[in-house]
Image 1 (cartoon, helix red, strand yellow):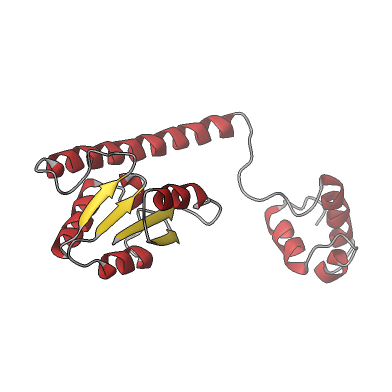
Image 2 (image 1 turned 90 degrees about the vertical axis):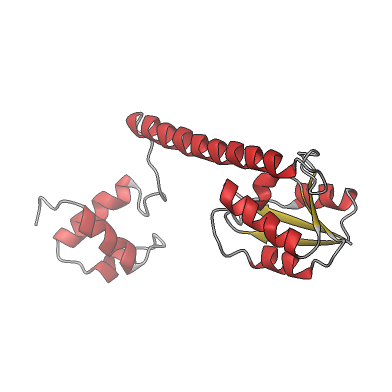
Length: 189
């Protein structure tokens, strides 16, 4: 039996492309999850490996969907081998555990994936620094517009309670007003 394993790193990402590729490659059962590859707890991967019997194959669209570093990749492949099963990657057809050179190939691919992840992290951090230098704000939008902020400060300075200010039909909670009040300097108080 050919089992597939599909993974994306976050709930905002879509598994459809991986599922289509695995189905087209002949996978009869596909285990799927939305969890970071850097996370050790991947229950669906554990189930997929647990389902393997001698002669079965575990297939992925790419080795980076299975593991993020060489050690993790080699540990997973060892577990697949212990079950008497094989492993294949659609994107890297040379990664087929029936080959005598598979461990060398997999180690090289794992190092490449680890290096790429490191480079992505570096590029993301550099991009964030550049964006901050350009004045880009990160995080959620402010709960209040500048006009609402000014009015809220005036009302708070005049003695209105946070609850009263929040009830001004802005659709904000007392917590939003409290959080705004905590981070805003009060020259009028």
